[in-house]
Length: 422
Image (tube, rainbow, N blue to C red; front, side, top):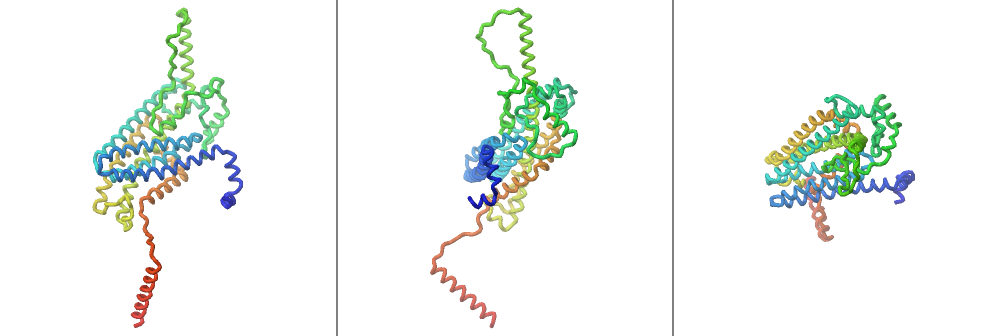
């Protein structure tokens, strides 16, 4: 401990103890990642036992549950930095899930297992696209009514118009919105000026209180839980007796309530739009990993099976050069379906949000390249290293046996020298 403190330095420990809450959250985040290294290899061992049994389908259904649980745990540790959440969570949990799903598809022998996996993925994609399309259409209509715009204006254009209108922006609830990112981006002068202007705008008195019914969409979309509409009137006590009032006053009161509800809904439109865009980014990164990992794993199997050390890989037992192509056939089918869903997602996002999927993906991979590459390389080395049998074995030998072997080796070397001299 003393040597570790000497190497790290006094400043590191002072900074760590200064913000103890953040340090504890970081340690819990590391522990949750270590949990992945324990849970998924154990799951693979369980699935290997369940292969060729009637429990194979039930074990494969455990994989989405494990993914949702661990993703929720990691998400709880990164709620204070939403801009890093997709990279920190998706490139960790979804990498493990996609890799071990491809491994299970390779080992699965029943066609029912593959059908269940494809059906679950298809239902998930359809539900995600439907929810995204419905939510985007609703928000676009509300933004058009609030800031104006034509019917063919995309979501990004509408939200930019909202940010340029200071009077509307000041009425938005921004208690859970971060303007400054944890990462450094190269912004244009106009964008930087707009950002500085938004920082200086103060909220209106009605929007300063923290909303009680608003929850970040990131806490649910990563595990596939749909959001409920927020602008819903609370149920009143129907048994309460109200005095009889004139019809004109009743209409005025009703109009006032409707106006208040409309203003309340519009004050959350900025946060709901940002949550929708955040959801779109999570969908893009998830579909990218789920489509690229099976392709890489299938190529890995086809290459390693032709090398001499293939016999030491646990997941390649029973696979030869002759049957390797047929074995990874199901893996490439899964990759093809994921690529198809990725393409459909790109078309839907381009039409509804005005977001070009490949441009957005390239932006994330470029701006967070060090973090993403570090995670992928680390997880790949760890996961593939677990599947290699140790090359050497230790056998205990008695001293008498060791002396006998040394004497025999000396005699053999002497005879070899005599033969060479002779």
